[in-house]
Length: 258
Image (cartoon, rainbow, N blue to C red; front, side, top):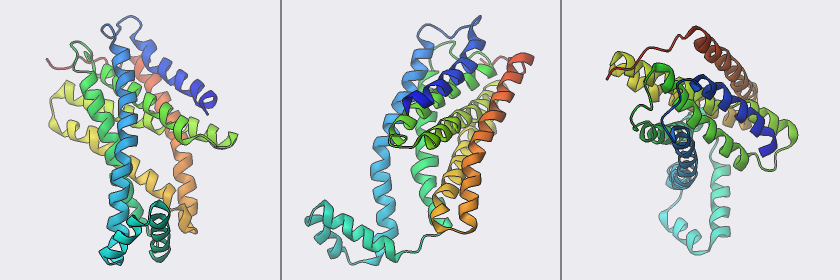
């Protein structure tokens, strides 16, 4: 998987960082951003375990007396897994349940951690001097996150699946969106853009993941899930074109407020 996603990640790194050739980040600035992306990926993976367990219990727990859960836990992992499997078969999946689950386990968790990690990384003086600097910083964090996530979750995928996953670098797109709104906030001082810098990526991430997860319901949701997956590749292409246009026309060279 690493051999498949590495060229895509390398291109996206180049796309964002070559613009800083003549106005580089402060010393170790890029390293700080890569570390922020790595830390956010690790934290998201660790936090996803208790978050998913809690969501699962809230979804399935009310169906059984607490003593049933106690017995299953005492019986070991196999007994607990069996109980969860039985209860899951009793609960009919629904799109609202996928939407709620993905909001907490993917949208809010992953985008929130990336946002916080990048904010810490760009606290260094002169890390963000222009609107474009903000876009680049959040994008680099997103690219790093995506690369590590692809290696972990792409293990065992066939070649086609690995290629589709690599090309659909959604975290890069979410990073650009987050950086655009946060940079707009830094340039204008309007709090609304600060709020949107987190809310828009969270909602987009939630909706895409929920649609893809709901494919198991079949019917129209299968088609919607495929469309959501393909939309990630389209979004990457559109985002690359936009970034190249911003760079060529110096659209986002406006300095941030001091």
